Structure formats: C-alpha cells, structure tokens
Amino acid sequence: MREISLHILDIAENALRAGASEIEIVVALDESADRLTVEVSDNGRGIAPELLKCVEDPFVTSRTERKVGLGLPLLAAACERTGGDLTIHSALDSGTRVCATFGLRSIDRAPMGALRDTVANLAAANPDVRVVLTVTAAGGHAFTFDSSEMKEALEGMSLSNPDVVRWMQGYLDEGIGSVCCLE
Ligand SMILES: Nc1ncnc2c1ncn2[C@@H]1O[C@H](COP(=O)(O)OP(=O)(O)OP(=O)(O)O)[C@@H](O)[C@H]1O
Ligand SMILES: [Mg+2]
Image 1 (cartoon, rainbow, N blue to C red):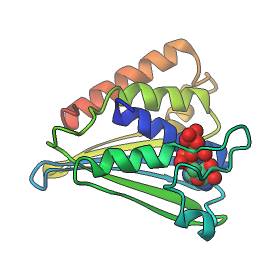
Image 2: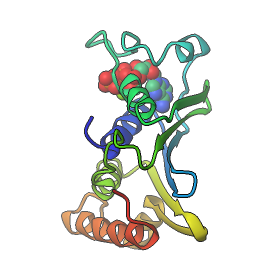
Image 3: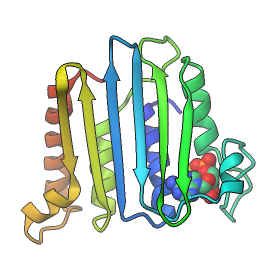
Image 4: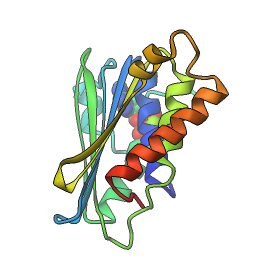
C-alpha cells in the first residue's frame, strides 16, 4: 500500500468486521527516537490465540470469499522495511490492539497520506461506531478527535451529511496540522 493512512483504514475495517463499537487510532511522532507509531485498538470480538499466532501469514483469513488475508502481512512488511515492527495483542470477546512502528526518516517509509479523509470517512460511514483519533508529538502537543462528541454536538444531524463530512475534514486537518507535519 502506498500510504500509511490506507493501512489504518484496512486495520479499522478488520475491527468493523469484528463487530467493534469503538475504534481508537493513535498516531505518535517521536522525532528524537526517529519513530512513528500507529496504534489501532478496538473492542470487537478479538482474535483466537491459534489464529493470532499466524495472522501475519498471507494465507490466513476468516474471510470466506477468498483465501488470502493481506492486510496485516502487508502492514508488517511496510513496518519492517523501515526498521520497525508490528505487534498484535488480542483477547477473545474483549478486543484487539494493533501496534505498528516505522522508522520515521527511513527512505522506505510510506507517506502518511490523507489521515483526515480516512478518519472522517470512517466516522461518516459508521455513525454508530465511536471513532477516536489522537495525534501526539514531542513537547506534549496533542490533538484528539472523537466522533461521539461530534455526534452529540450535531444534535441529530447525521455524520454522513456531506457538509458535516467537509467540516470534519477541515477540523481534522487543522487539528493534526497544529500538532505536527505528518508526511
Ligand atoms: N481487529 C480484529 N479483530 C478480530 N479479528 C481480526 C482483527 N484483525 C484481523 N483479524 C483476523 O485476522 C484475519 C487476517 O486479517 P488481515 O487483515 O490480514 O486479512 P483479511 O482482513 O482477512 O483480508 P484483507 O485485509 O486482505 O481484506 C482476519 O480475517 C480476521 O479473522
Ligand atoms: Mg484486513
């Protein structure tokens, strides 16, 4: 995949398929450690221990329409190319946390891409799922977007309303940009 935000979308889709009602995305930039960390946690049904052991194998999937599951193997490869790695913690009936680390300045690191669109579209397409994004950088700079707060503020207006989506994109753009320059 050409962009990290597309990996995030893919991991979030796994969470949605696992029945999650909450998806939390944390993007942490640590320039001094030359590290970019992306964590996606969900409260879905979790991954059974036998599956968890081999989930980075492309031929492991619970999909029935095809025999390969590429999301996690591709993300693991994208991390490892940059000197980072992928770890997955999961507990049945409680949820899953996928933690991807990348060498921030590695020439092999994919660009972040349109994180604001990924998050805004995720929230718009899944209004009953709480989508939270936190972006942090050095010096305690942080920004949080919470779709459930947004929903409350909208007083009945839908998160999928095109004007709301545009507003969320602008809000995310500004918030993310105020913390760091994610490239
Ligand atoms: N957050 C999650 N919660 C529960 N199960 C998960 C989660 N993420 C992955 N899995 C399980 O791991 C399998 C492999 O995931 P992966 O993303 O690699 O492939 P896929 O989703 O099956 O296919 P693709 O990503 O190519 O569409 C999934 O089929 C699913 O069974
Ligand atoms: Mg997947």
